[in-house]
Image (cartoon, rainbow, N blue to C red):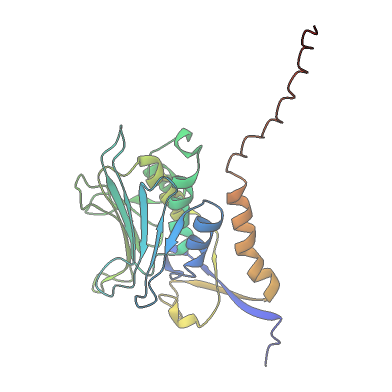
Length: 257
């Protein structure tokens, strides 16, 4: 049955670590419009580069079939050496957004807990059999802590004989509260919406994923990104109100002769 342009088929996929990458605009558009990151554009290169207002963080989105598609580099700070984070092409953008949103949130470092394992344990993740770290309830996602500048933190695979579906890596100096925000988004049990061809969904058509299809108004689907931009923009402190120019006191009358 043909759908009218006003209706869109949306697949809601669970578990979210097998939902596929999604639309990169979920990360890049709010960074620019709500968080003030500037972007560079090279029409001859299929990549996006965004830099933070203070020029200390640089996010690069660059298709790389042999590596990570998303890479964030952060310059050193007085209390922390330079660090990086990277994400594979099929890392769900909503999970990447958990990390990026915490990075751009002025209040995020005041979070009650910065233990990256805590959100996973609360969601039923268990110690990984025969290795370090935690494994998801379906056994397909694994999170491990390393002490190395090239540490691998989260990996999703379909089977032991296949390569990773996606991997997230965090340098040893990456702020723990940001990694905890990533694992919180990873552990969230709510399904993720996906439009377009379902073949982009890892393990599509298998029992590894649950797919619920709904027909939604196109305007509602498009509004989700606008709503996200509005929520993130509201976190930014309002600029200080300009005080009106003080009225100059009247000049004292001069002496007359």
